Length: 99
Image (cartoon, rainbow, N blue to C red):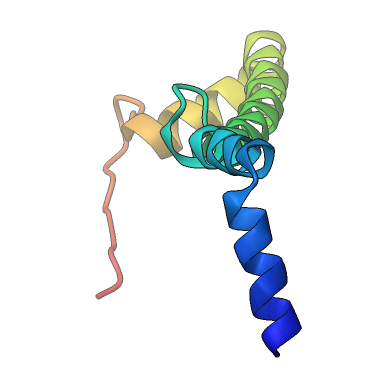
C-alpha cells in the first residue's frame, strides 16, 4: 500500500504526466468538440439516419399509392369515398364511429 502511494505521488510530481492528464481532461470535458458532445452527436446522427430510412420508405409507399390512384379509376373513387366522404348524387352516407 505504501509503495502504491509513493508511486502515485511520483506520478503527480511528474510534469509530463500532469500535462497529459490535464490535456485528456480538457479533451473529454472542456474542448469545443469534446468527447461527450461527440457521443451525443453520433447518437443523434444515428437517430436521424433511421428517420431518413423511415421517410424514404414512406415516400416509396406514397409514390406507389399515387401511381395506383392516377392509373386506376376504381381506386381513385374508393380513396375519395374513404378519405373525403364523397358520394354520388343519389346516395346518402352514414358515418359510424366506435366509442
